[in-house]
Image 1 (cartoon, helix red, strand yellow):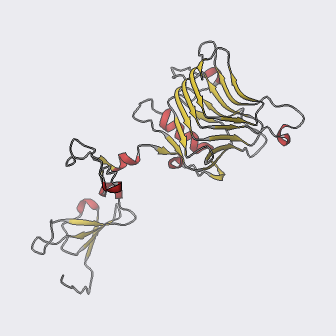
Image 2 (cartoon, rainbow, N blue to C red):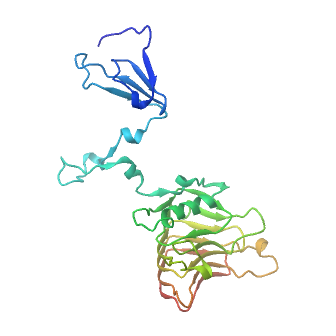
Image 3 (cartoon, one colour):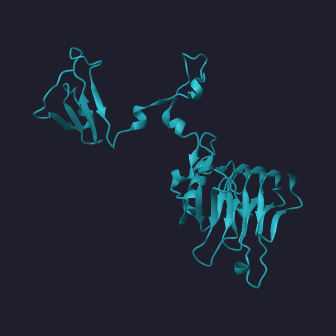
Length: 297
């Protein structure tokens, strides 16, 4: 390899659309998108191709440069065959791979035990499951290990799927900053995030196909924890529902709190609800279900 002494670096700058073919080793700076390029040189010089190569900086689109992903599963020296043959593996865009599921932290939640994550969690639920009814938009919403402090009700719409790293690791905790607090820590909603007497109005889809797993819903105050309202096809697995009914919170009066409540109306009866390996603690009622509900196991 030849040693070339550089006494003066030659460079050009301008708009990206006007970037010319740079000479070998010449630098080019595109002002508008803040990207740096270097000329490849000529084929005579030994360059494999003529053109410019981007020099990676903090402004580079790394996902565009590494545009494809192939699952290998090559632990132990064995490579999984994803396509029709080993020579024709299935490739995907890297961004598509990253978008297989969404983390609540992608929407601004911190999970640090002190930041109010109410708005971030509800924004994630709205964007993934309510803003558009298209199935292509929906993604499972992942809660990495942490304590997610909330000050108001979490609204869980139709088709929502929430999962954490384990009930002891991923905790959503109601801890209002003042004496005002919601009736429920979390509740199901229709596709427009409407609740109560408004549920199902405005051509909204009633709550259905909701899944929650490996999470804890915990209240620091004496209020009910989770309301499953007018919901069908719901599944809860390894979820803790913990109320705030302590002597200090209750005072003289007796609270009428519920860890998990299933409720409907004359026009929308809850049905096909499965609750498996869940815990209910520190509420007046651990599990409360309407008599009209069907298929609750």
